[in-house]
Length: 125
Image (cartoon, rainbow, N blue to C red; front, side, top):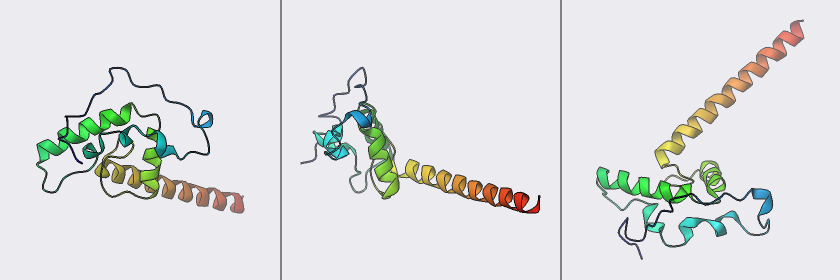
């Protein structure tokens, strides 16, 4: 059942300490430790025809939940690798994830171009 965006949100004043991946139970999937599994699921996905101001407020509240999540990095990488087209995942909105993915693609192209240039120089030398 979806609740109004701020009714169940209780943001901790101090973020919970992040547990390094290697110290977690490696048999359990990362999402079992996700803070959003508890009761704030309505914060992470937009209702249809949500007004812009309400969306921005909801997304900021969702990001505050993400900020205290011990598996935020794993969640973000999941959303980038899938790629998840909707919602807030790992503290990023869908638009922010598109920007990160575009930057990664550009960086990969730059690295490939640099490697080809290096190979040509080595072959000529």
